[in-house]
Image (cartoon, rainbow, N blue to C red):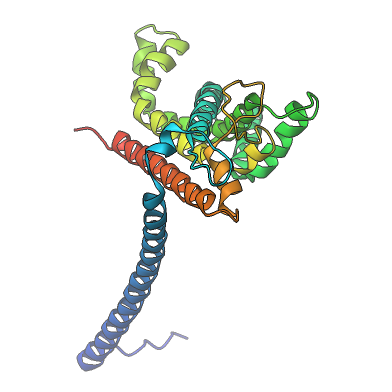
Amino acid sequence: MSATPMPALGPARDARLAASLSRRRKWFDRVVKVLCTGATMIGLALLASILFTLIWRGFGALGLHVFTDITRPPGSHGGLLNAIVGSQVQTLIGTAIGTPVGLMVGTYLAEYARDSALGNAVRFVSDVLLSAPSILIGLFVYTILVAPFGGFSGIAGCVALAVIVVPIVVRTTEDMLRLIPISLREAAVALGAPKWRVIVFICYRAARDGIATGVLLAVARVAGETAPLLFTSLGNLNWSVRLTQPMASLPVTIYQYAGSAFEDWVDLAWAGALLITAGVLALNIVARVALRPRA
């Protein structure tokens, strides 16, 4: 028994159906566009409100004494020189420790252990460390470097920041090296170059901008970290650049001064927050410019 064929739609019915579908698509498109625009405006308004408040409160507290004087007791018109220098020292040393480690691990994952069980395990641990709360890293470093030696120190703060830097550089390095075409490696090998030369002189040069961008983003991340430094370098109201002693830092100073009952300390907290924001913004701009493809 043969199946009865379905009657074909007439021209009028086809036109009505097409018009109905067109109106539905246009209505749905307008709704989605309005929702997306509204969400964007809300996000921009919140960001503008934060920046406006930060500039309004922080710029008014800025002065030459902020950069030339150390933190002092309330009412003494102190500055943030020791905190600025302490943050720079710990950030630079932490980046110098974490960047080579992250670079080597990322190279191993991209070049030597693409689909191996060990490579997958290392990649999983790196991803977990990347998303781990920074306070846990501070507690870990406190357990291994602060408690056994009986005191807080700048070197403990540097190590805590280095642990945060490592997974960021690992992820960026692996991703950038994986973007390099296999044909480029094969051409170098065909010319007789050993694998380490291919990686150093071919792959690293091709991925240089992306890796540098990852390092800059890692610096921007650790520059504003507070929790790890509370458990490691702790902070210091006096001038000290000795890594074996507690060391001041901008994030910790802001944390301590922001909740103070003294108006001059609160003003210094706003000034420090503005300095950190400006520094992180500058690093992100540099990273964006470095990531921009070259003509």
